Image (cartoon, rainbow, N blue to C red; front, side, top):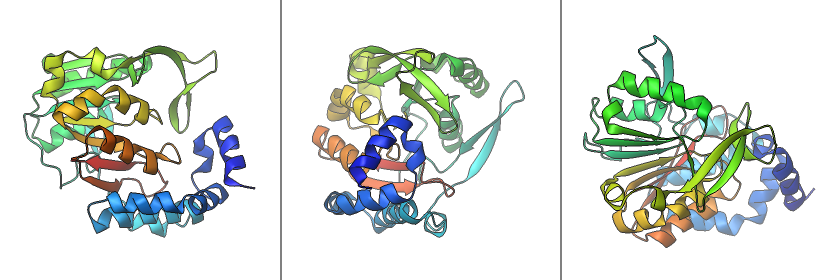
Length: 281
């Protein structure tokens, strides 16, 4: 079966069914040129090794390829309700990115605030401002509880919307791999907005760091914040594991918006080919 036929099946069922195996062997064979171009964009040998290892894992499902490159440091935060929230200390804030207590952090796909917890663990609890974007109403209550527990409620804006390159109403469905936009009528309703139109000029000018994990909608959201990225060049941590061509599309998209970024890739999960992050600094 060709990659194109498998791609149609994956689009119908969802990409979670194609984390490894036949599809990826065919896909990378047909896109070898684009893969080589991606390697050339990367700044260090570690990034190339990471991508090569993830590709090998997807083709073979041999754990050794991920375990040798994955950086995972699972930690726990206990909130004011005595609930434990897990976060990966390494993910989104690797040691080659400098952080300070004056970060203005945009968390796209906040979930319950685990990335915010991780940021404050790196900055000894200090941050200037947080914009938390989370479209799922079902996550907002726990997100606010954790923000309150961190003591940053007054400097955090919770935006109960998702991000895209145009405003629209959508529905989300849930499965074991997470939530995703769906055409199913029984999904949870959510609103998507354009980042550059949603925040004021002053708010956009202050942003220093954008993290994004939004289940395959990263490229549309990046287009919607092109003005911010072009003018202010914030640090970026963008997930590139949701769609097969994320490796090829997302770095070139960022480069087209602002050509002065340097790219790095790190892998933050060793059981599955997920949590692959592109860092642009």
